[in-house]
Length: 86
Image 1 (cartoon, rainbow, N blue to C red):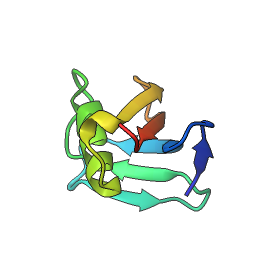
Image 2 (tube, rainbow, N blue to C red):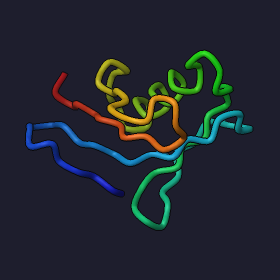
Image 3 (cartoon, rainbow, N blue to C red):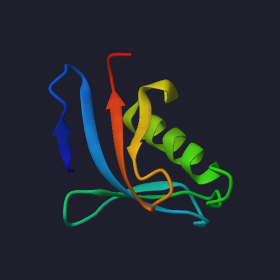
Image 4 (cartoon, rainbow, N blue to C red):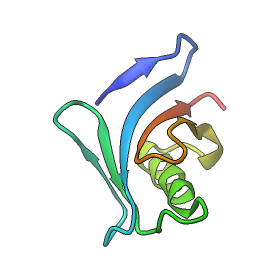
């Protein structure tokens, strides 16, 4: 998995490619070390982004408030920060 430390304890940055309107929610690892996340929500009104954050929080076993998008808000390719210390 492509993890980049941000230099602070308990924080990682992940490269994620999102596939909205999938048949199910799932997290897959790509060959280049990034993650592909399939979400059932459409990419309208930020619904796919909200679902993405929920799916990642559940996958990594952290609260939803510990996961945020740091770049790529309107793109399928995103940088996600997970702060396990919150």
